[in-house]
Length: 347
Ligand SMILES: [Zn+2]
Image (cartoon, rainbow, N blue to C red; front, top):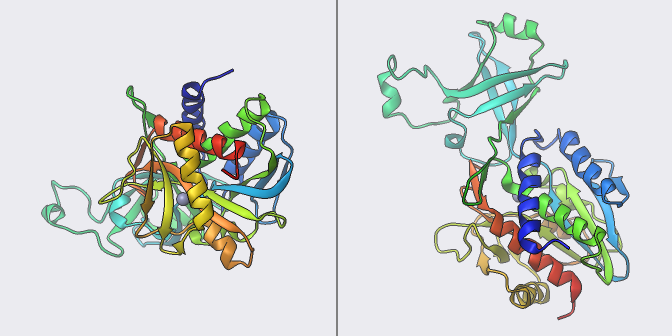
């Protein structure tokens, strides 16, 4: 039987693999297929909702519960092709432009091709444009420079690139010697990886939940409606999404975060208390925090009319929605908490 240390490392491997699969909201099939493939390989049949969420039933019993992570990420779409062949873009999800400057990307053309490029400031050579040193990035201050010999609009259109094509930001997944994970899109590929590690525990007999437990991998969280559809019999819904790390918050990149309140209001008193109790029993490094600017999939479930108790946990992630960082300890702590929670849901 694997110990939690090994399971945390395995979850980190899965997280980095998933980060590298482009899946901006609206174009998530590749990541959803990989998640479904892992679950099927562990012996859990999966279903898809019409809008692409992956659902599987991990265990049966009473008091049905869903654990929800999201496979969709931030990204952009091509807004227009400039006369000089550079691309204007429109962002998918909420993040500051500064987090895009000099990031590499791929353009997924609806005509079938995939092209590489880079988000650059206008006139981006510092040896030519002295103003770059003082410049602030503002609306339309960045453009996508294609790695193509296409110096004007017609040449770009002739490649098959057009407005509405999807832009994925390259994840640059890295694991350091000390166990840190650096990548874009750890939000929420890290949460997905923890749920897949939990499924593996159940499949190997290391955990036998005594309540009906669904795993849900949603596809539109970053644009606000991922959790609108959940299994109809659920009385409880827990988002497994990135824990906020920053000014005056208790969580670090090595801990599991339990959210008491975010922009959508307070989470359920009993669920939040039970999550914290499970963290203490399991010996997790954890913090209960209030996230100043955050919304989760399960709040969307409530807004969509589901009558569920709701909660939010996840690995601490710094520099969220940028080049993010967490640690494999945070994934391990999240896994330990959830495993303990499923063992004794009423404690
Ligand atoms: Zn997220």
